[in-house]
Length: 366
Image (cartoon, rainbow, N blue to C red):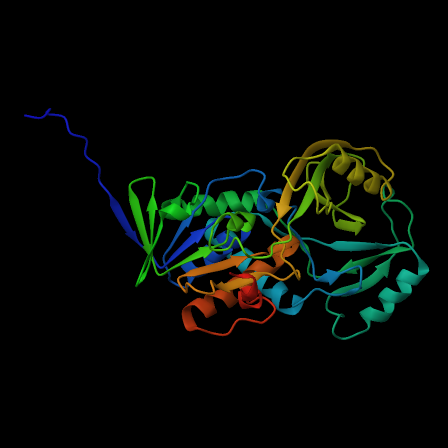
């Protein structure tokens, strides 16, 4: 007769519509938009404090300042972002979406003339405001500052923490592994290490650069970029708006300001560097006259893609495996609109925009 004690394991099977890998900005907004349309989701994610979503300063605005042009699809991205994040705030009873005045510092008469000329274009008039003198004594003397309409920042850390708490009953806190994924005729099954199976119609990889670690998307031409951001403490600065020229200065309260960001394509790790802090400090000193102390320094790797357009679509062979990824440095701005676009594709079979369709890279798959 065998021993009286026998361990008992109760295996749970969860039925859902979509299994989302990753709870960064992309995965969180996608989950929120799916749930408010009435679909069930399960999310697989482990917190990484150095993920690009958590490190990001979260600034959003409609302009490409180097070319003085409108950001790609800004007329679609801006209103959807504003509506979505405000809806998330109401649903989660949080405060992390900040619509803030944004000013671009202009350093020459030529820049002022270019701004005045372009702001008269009816396509840009809704984004580009008038030029006013710089009156803040802590900011260095320039030709003026140009107001940018529809701008602000998302406190990404607060947003992700709030959505994670909201998703707690739909969250598997573990590292995703291809070995745990099983494909069925009717969908997919993920075998969790917590004695739980999750059955879903489709799996969505919204986990940034970690998607490259999966055999399903190891062939995708990501072009990752390392970015560093510092937070300073400066009681004498007294800025109430975001300003930028070379770097942005974003007030976040209690005399603290986020300063960023760097862009580097080598040494791709999430370790803050002295070079990064020095670069940001030097650029900051070119803009302000007052002293400051660095109180935080963060680094992350942005999941940018060759061609600088996001990745939406279905694996070239397996239609149950999909991706919503590659948002790069403009994730906060782009994700809400693209999440709706992607959901329409998943649910209704609508056509994806060519600029974002994963099929543009199918030739890379072997």
